[in-house]
Image 1: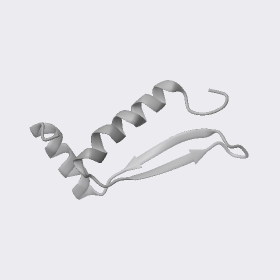
Image 2: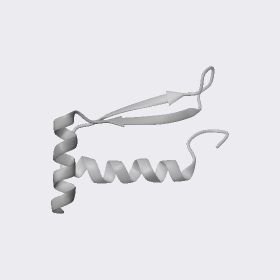
Image 3: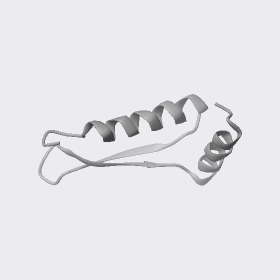
Length: 64
């Protein structure tokens, strides 16, 4: 979108947050803006390896 994040991207980010936060998994979120502006270019969500392994384990076991 010309003025920010498109709706599909927002839905994906929201799904990630709705899944990860209730499981108590720690993560970092980094926002990247377009140069010289205030529009969002992309969002990076990163996990420490142990948190990522725990997230996968909980999702595989249906522990949520």
